[in-house]
View 1 (cartoon, rainbow, N blue to C red):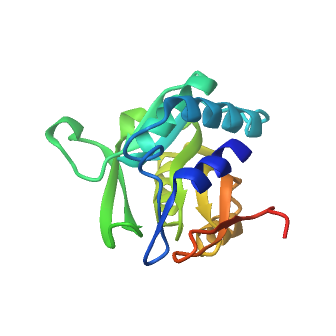
View 2 (cartoon, rainbow, N blue to C red; view 1 turned 30 degrees about the horizontal axis):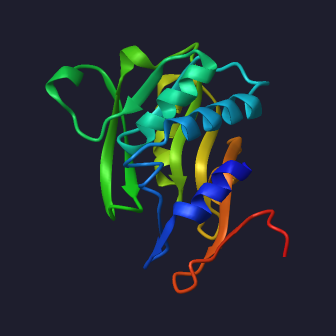
Amino acid sequence: MQLLKDRIRKDGKIKAGNVLKVDSFLNHQMDIKLFEEVGKEFKRRFADMEVNKILTIEASGIGIACVVAQSFHVPVVFAKKTQTKNIAGDVYTSKVESFTHGRVYDIIVAKEFLGKGDKVLLIDDFLANGKALEGLAALVEESGAELVGAGIVIEKGFQVGGELIRSQGIRLESLAIVESMDEESGEIVFRGDKA
């Protein structure tokens, strides 16, 4: 998606440790016009799939998932990282290791919002090591719902996540796949760029 790649090149900041900061438009301050285009693109890419639920993980995936859900005309469910009083009772849980935060979380979804008959599309902002998607996929499997695919805004193609998810037979559509980043020069190379 060229619009997204251009925006990453313009406003993305490369930090030490293979961190790509896109918080000025994607996951802190959110550019809703860009999100609308992202939603349309995921709808186009998954047009052949029957989707009746979008599933994401808190927190940075929620905004994107909500706008994507508008294109599909379906609800969004998000996995919570902490159990609260209003999510008591029957829940699905899975463990997720966060690349960004360097810790393991339990993620939780109330059973009433996910189950047999649901056709679930996973949506998230980043794919690095694939642990968040693996955790979400485990929740879908545990619920008896059908996982139809995963949509990622930015995939770090130089990390193992994309290969891991694809090797599990999950249909993965990433809108921008970063092949390399250079902190000194600020250069970002995307999969498909002409050499």
